[in-house]
Every structure is written in C-alpha cells, then in structure tokens.
Image 1 (tube, rainbow, N blue to C red):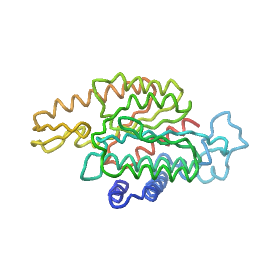
Image 2 (image 1 turned 120 degrees about the horizontal axis):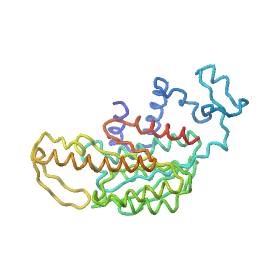
Image 3 (image 1 turned 135 degrees about the vertical axis):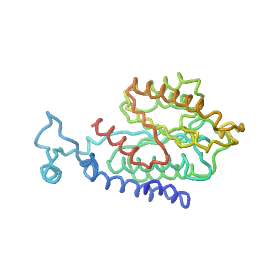
Image 4 (image 1 turned 180 degrees about the vertical axis):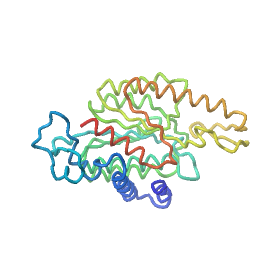
Length: 303
C-alpha cells in the first residue's frame, strides 16, 4: 500500500521525477527480499551467466556476495531501445474523484523511464487518444528524461473533452516507425469498440512481425470496471469518450456485464499468447511492483 500512496501525493503536487524515484527505490529495495534478488542494484552492469559465456567476464566479487554467477556487461551491450505507448483518452481519467488510471499510468511510465535511465537504456514515449498527441525520439540522456516527465505531467490536468481511443490505428502507425527489435510497452484500458477485436489483434501482430518484444499492461480499476461493484444500486453512468448517459441498476446487469468483459479479456489474452506477447492485467489499486517486475523479467530475457 506504500506504493499506491504515491498516487495520493501525486494529486497534491505533480512532481513525477521525485515520486518515480521513490517508487523505483522502494521496488529495488524490495528485490532484496524477493526471488528476484540479484536483479537489484547490480542489474544495470551485470547479466546472469549462461553456458558458453566467457569465464573471464565473471564478477567473482558479486558471486561472493550473492552466491550467483553474473558476468560483467559493458556499455555496448546495454543498448536496449524501449518505446512506452500510453493511452491518454478520456476513459483513462476514471475514476474522476480519486486515484485514477491516468495518474497510475503516468507514474508507471515515469518509473519505467527511471529504471531504463538507470540501466543506461534508450527510451521513447508516445501519448495517444484518437490520434498520436506526442511522440518522442529514442534517447537515454537526462535532458530527454526530464522532457518526458514534463509531457507526462501535462496529462494530469482535466480530461480532454470526449477524447476516444484509437489504439489499432496508433499501433499500426507506430509499427512502421519503431525500430526493429525494440521493447514496446503498451499502457491502456483497451476501451475500444469491443466488436472490432480484429483491428487490435492485427496491430499487435504487426508489432511482433517487426521482431519487437511487446508488453501489454491492461490498466483497470478492477473493483468497478471489471466486477461492476457499486453495491448493487441505481447508478447514472456517463461515457467519458462520447458523453452518453445511462441509468442502470447494477444488480440487474452485473452477470451479463461481467461475462461480456470476461469474454473480451479472454480473447485478448489468447491472441497475445498466440503472438508471444506478454499480457498483464493491471489493477490500479495494487501498486507498481507487478508492472516493474514484469518489465524486469522481460528485459532479462532480451539480454
């Protein structure tokens, strides 16, 4: 719960750089107590020894501290290029009166950028709704990092008026521009026309066809958006992306709603598995460890 409290601080002041450092430092400290010990402060300069690696690069001092064999990794080996693709459509500003998806994803993106910078990797950021609103080059400098934090902080104001999601079109555009063999991280609630699955799947497949590794974080407020938990009462629902209003008794529609959402997520997960894309359901109430651990595992497999 300490991680999630960072979102409450973010409501009071938009200092993403400071809060991202807090999240990352807490995460790295936690690695010492987890099965991922060894990926902690040394993971920027070392990689796990694999059979066939030259023994002359083994770090014996690190072996003495960890009882694990790592080889020293040099500057030219830390050349991962990561492109973070973040949904900033109106639905991401839900829930309106508390820690919401846009704050969670902005801080998640900032924390990932902080980790990438720590690892000397290059990073880029794309923000989109119905179209690409911002897209950066791929760099690893401190100035670049600060510029991306500035762009992320700009997203934390009021939600754009009726800004829909055009994820398939955006991903198709990016697939033509992102360099091959990049790591692409997608942060979205996937509130797209659920009857148009094929367009989303085709766009994800195109990213993989270009030899990219892809991590998909499906960001949701699980209690209300997946479970429709509103204490079974009459609720006025406002569609943040088209403005339509519906008054519904949640008890009457809950079963059908949950089944529809489950069917969509099942198809999305199945396609991602088929394309060898990592699909991670992400509840904004759970904090950031799940996201950062998933990233770290993926990165370790790429090098």
